[in-house]
Image (cartoon, rainbow, N blue to C red; front, side):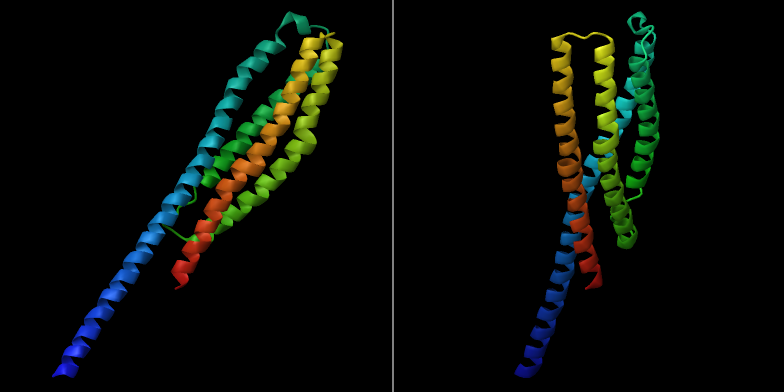
Length: 199
């Protein structure tokens, strides 16, 4: 009789343990999904902010193009064309980024989400290189030539140098801090979710 009672107690405890394991796994999954969701939302919101900045920059560029002080100048007009091209390409590029980020769904296929994140990592690396080696230098070269052509005073040159430094620091922060930390949070959570799924 005692053996039967002991078996029943053992079976009951085993059932409770299995239920607790499933509950713990579900809680861990929910925490990871919530954590990843926050990081993903930060990335999406940052991209939307970029789209808004690009949209707001368009009328400013058009307004500056029509200013009489730039009549007969070459470098400022080339700079405005460069900015306009950057804005149009930035809108398309950032719009695609938002669409790709919105495809991520932590309740669905982890493999697909991991592929999207891996593509995003590659995209961010390329974007960083293009920003550092093409976009920023062209802005500042065209800006310096424009300032020279417009006979800008020392305070405007100081302003441009300050903007140059802020641009470099902002680019560093954007790619090496903001994108990297949020993407790594998502990637770690996806890896942990994959491990949970395999168990």
